[in-house]
Length: 474
Ligand code: PHE
Image (cartoon, rainbow, N blue to C red; front, side):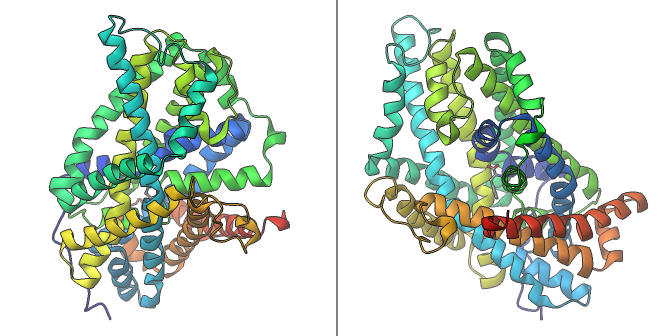
């Protein structure tokens, strides 16, 4: 039943290339935009601590499972699951979760590129402001000098009202993503990670130090790590697990696809742990970068999704060298977003190559182009199509615009479903000898991992999926 699947010959040039690319895929808007937003809205400490638990108890075992499938299957997600199933005497119908994952990745890419387009615009605004500051001989002045808070906020409103601007940014970002993916695993994805990830970490450390020196680190620490357990409602737990899955790129078959380009070696346990630590480390550092600045200027940490676009640019105004650091901040987010969007495009692209026999350029263009078109609908949802409610018949999405509907449907339905099926397949169906030999886990680590993947993950994810879909049950 697996005869139609062709192996891709592409591969990473080293173990570190894979690790950098996988960390690049995980670290993205989810860490720097979505995590601080949710932590701020959900009251901080209790959310953060529960989220950390989700990353290690549920996320980490799933990371290992996805990499295992890819490493063992050596082709796109659907083909890899079929191979592992065939070697384990299980039904190849399990490959359905590879298809769900590839579809989710495609849909997430459509709105991810739109949001990254906003970041691109802000990088441009802050870059222009920095150039002006340098031109006027004050390179270390604050950002957007002379604008009051209402004017700074108005920029976002104006941007949303301008479909042409949104479209241009979306096109530029999707174009860059497509360009990198079309060049291939080695010359495109790996190269991008090799250049961009060190740049990302240097910027991140620079900005955290800046926040520590100029901002209110003490308040930020208290806010992020002192739990008020009464705030841990079922909804907050639901959001925390969803955030863990999204941030680790789980449930979209991304790590199956990247894992299939590992040609030799095992030691997948330590590799998985490294990815989980890096992802959570960046999320926490992003919190420790953003909240000291927010608190130093006395702004509201619970501002929601606009925190990064309306609150922070204003905060950078009153801070020394705010023009410079404000610009660097948006460059940082942009870099993180590119290394994630290429992983999103790579999943369906690999499917087209492996299952349809398309060339890489053709496959990447079809899926990148398709996601671009859906993204246009998302961005029109902020202006000309603002009345449209794609799933308005469903109470959960009654008042949700196009972009948030795709975000909500993929995040609340497709990712948990993908994660649930992955854990059931690897925990119960995959041949244990195969798992042990491919992952290289010690007997103790294997026992622990199996308990988590076979019992804890499916139960926890099923609970989230059901409570997420039927909020009335809570
Ligand atoms: N993990 C990415 C982020 O944090 C988003 C993403 C989700 C990427 C799913 C790939 C797959 O931004």
